[in-house]
Amino acid sequence: MLYTEPVGHPAIEELTVYPLNRAELRLADAFAGGRSAVERTAVENATRGRGAAYVARVRHTTEMSWRMPVLFSAALDDGRMTVDHFDALWRRMDRHPCVRAEVDSQIIARENRAAERARREELREQAREAGEPEPTWDDEGYHDDAWDGYSADPVRRDPFSGSMVYRLPDPENGRSSFLDEHVERVLLDWLRDIPHRLSSPGGEQTTVPRPTVTIHRLREAVDRALDDAAEDLERYREQGQEMAEQAEQADRDRLEAAARAKKAADTRARKRAERAARRKAEKVRDAEQAAKATKATKATKAAKAGTAAKAGDTGKAGIPVEDAAAVVPDDGDARPF
Image (cartoon, rainbow, N blue to C red; front, side):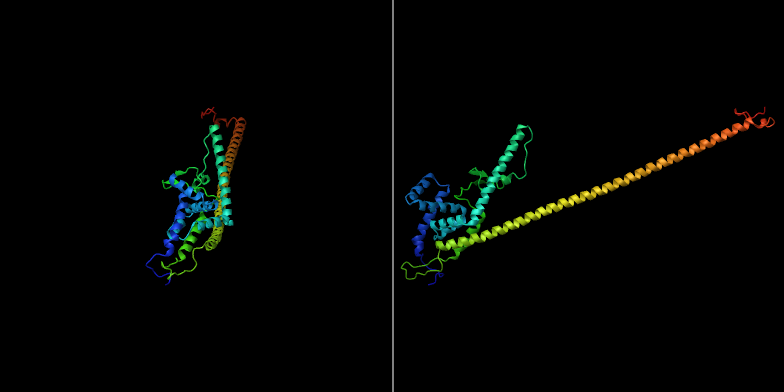
């Protein structure tokens, strides 16, 4: 019987092994929070006597349950994955160079944001002491750690939806949400593509499908997923860098265009002012020339009038007596002497 053919009975693993695997996963999920104190105490007592290695596997599975909730739910439904699978997944991701580099960059960025918040708070305090208005910045949200799950408040209200948001637990050794989501998608497809083993209760119709869910195959799938995610992340960063450079170049072009426009406007304004000054100077010069011409004309007329007056006085003094009757006196009397 082929394993793809439907059967009228459950598989042997579904009756024996899968419940045990699901119980271990539920045991690890009890540490994720939101459980009662009695339940958590029972889980601690159950794992205390199994050694430090088993406790570490359970702890890593607990962390992966909230880092990859969709994969964890699929594993509970599938029944073939155990705490050993999730422990191998955690350790494989923790040791990958891309994950370590991403975690280190997050730590540095978080420290830089904390330093920037401290600097701004110091500037606000200095402004308050000086009695001046407190400075404000447009990028306040960028320097707040609440958006990336590192808020100190365990419960806070989302500023966009208004709903209550619960703070995620702290990862044991850092994490990258982008890498977690990428690996989760790959492992979901990997788990769903592996067929289940179908067998009869007596074992006479047992069929063994192609590759089953083994830890070494899980490690290979995780390594491939992380390598692909590292390439995608590098490509996204290069694209982001290119977009940032393009944006900076566009800003520089706009500033240069604005500077050229301002320079051209200043040049046009200067030329208009020069033309207006020349026209004004020409008008002043024309007015001065007209005034000089008028003054010269008046002076010429005055000189001619003075010359004529002098000539008239000379004639009156030297005329004969017989012609004196023809001389008109200055008082306007036209009678003869």
